[in-house]
Image (tube, rainbow, N blue to C red; front, side, top):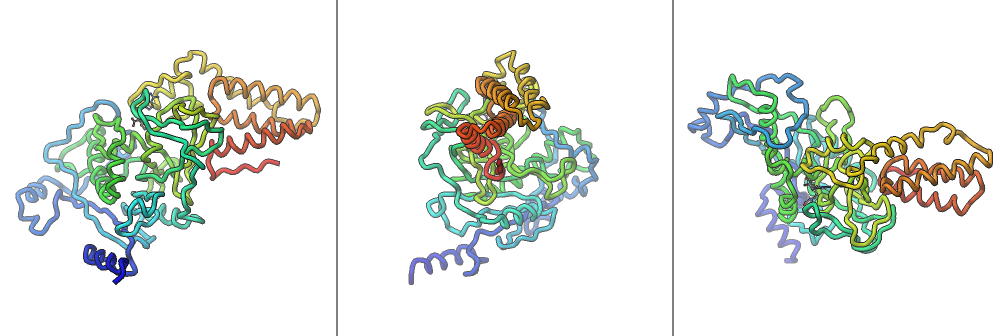
Length: 454
Ligand SMILES: C[S@@+](CC[C@H](N)C(=O)[O-])C[C@H]1O[C@@H](n2cnc3c(N)ncnc32)[C@H](O)[C@@H]1O
């Protein structure tokens, strides 16, 4: 008997539901029991009787209670006496299944993984995904080319090691703007917002908004435990080794790490409401989640659906041994707004911009610099094009001196230089700015955004 036959018999014995044509790790859906435990004989136990007595059916909830304002910092995390998160009812399904009800909480592994596969079999790794409904899985799996191998730089260009801010990522060689630093498949993808899980508080208990949110987070943690339980042990250990800046606000250890390390990869489709399937999704990574924040970052990222990986690229040239930074918040906001947006990460930013009192005034001028209509108007006049070139070169130099190449205005000035150099027939400069433009766009928006110019 050959080794693959041995393996198959072993798998079928170990996983009796497995048939020879279905060796893939199964999906599962997660529902909730109204009561904490649902085992044979459950209703005869003391705990169950108490539960049946004290818990009613979930009470209707006012929509404002479901608004996603998560606590940060140190808050009162006590939950009412008698409350326990509901037990999850897990139902396995064939991982080739694509149709799931909109309200299903679906755990699936992408790309599909075979039973017994190890990271040596697939160094590109797998992602454990929690989706609300089947829409995201259908969209991802039907992406042309999915699952393509993750792109790799020609040599390893990053290292994870201690930094001023805990652990961080560092460049192991000089990296040019636009170059790939690393691409990585997430360990976990899950909804960016808290799903609408209503806690079953004891009958008659009227929770405050904070208590209600604490209950929702406790319920959600149970779901996340199931996702984590499906991971390869190495991936689970890597996830749990990540930093958690939400240890005192009631987020569980898994949700806390998602809040600390998650990077938005799938936008929600509707801005205003959070129907199932319209949730945005965020991803947590082994290496990329170690990158610290700067408001003047030297790297940016884009998610590529076909390889299901995040591509991290240099948004400006990076020197060997320099720390790699991304921005955790929008960098086109003034300092006070940025600091407020960073509160949930539990640190005060001390980057070169946050510590420079003149940086907000310069930011306002940079934004205005691309709004000037005379700069953009079609200009065949030779002097006009010369003026435009000088204007954009000066602004690019100012933006570079501030290390703010990640601002979209930097890209606008490169585009302006392409047009003006073309108008002046300066083809060497034209080619130089066109190359720069390609590198910058790739870093800023990833593979998804390709710009055709001239
Ligand atoms: C996504 S983790 C980054 C990796 C983290 N340094 C680690 O040790 O794993 C985010 C956390 O890193 C720290 N951090 C990131 N950027 C920082 C900065 N600019 N200043 C201070 N702390 C920072 C904060 O503790 C933040 O909650």
